[in-house]
Length: 228
Ligand code: ATP
Ligand code: MG
Image (cartoon, rainbow, N blue to C red; front, side, top):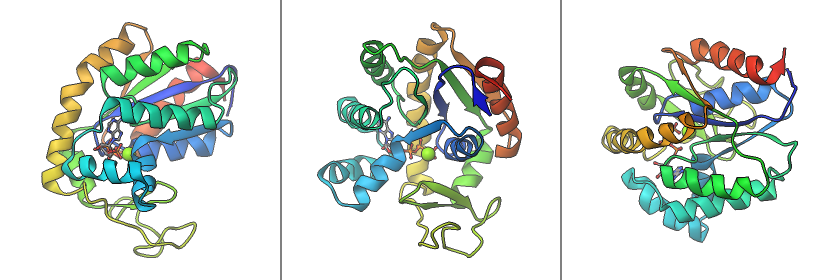
């Protein structure tokens, strides 16, 4: 699909709602799209044992959010490095902003370049489905590719389809930490949604599986930004 104007998309959704999966599907369909996932970025920092990675792992292990200022600086640096502040760039954010403070901070910075987020989509999935999913989730840390041993298993068990490298289980995908992450999400989401609702850019797509969600998301994007 080609777009008729730049898309600057934020995906919202509970942990395990499939933001990463929807991101991969969109990247495959929209050649000009690029993405940043705050969680993937942090897991990479942890895997290379950088100082920000060391800080991040303390929060992530407990299912807590990193302080707003740390994550805001990290993402903003990444998006200026990727040339996302250019008026023609088309991009997608997954996992950031996820508090009202982060949203305001990002908005202030993007405003200076006139490249504010112009579409926000909430992925709405039943909580019992999410809980089941996370138990079976495996990730390829360098790329962020996500597998599910039930729904989309890797071709070779435990290995990434593209690189053949090992998959990992996220340490924060266990029942106890996951409950904490879900709770944090519910605490933060209402004011965040209000912020984007007030800008008239908030939409919601609902469904039980990624295959049901994706066409809805895709059609929404086409209806606002593209021609198929
Ligand atoms: P999922 O990847 O399952 O959709 P999630 O959104 O909980 O779920 P990630 O986005 O991968 O997971 O984030 C993992 C952890 O990284 C969070 O629990 C938090 O500790 C930290 N983190 C990620 N993004 C942010 C953010 N915007 N602000 C603060 N902390 C963050
Ligand atoms: Mg994710």
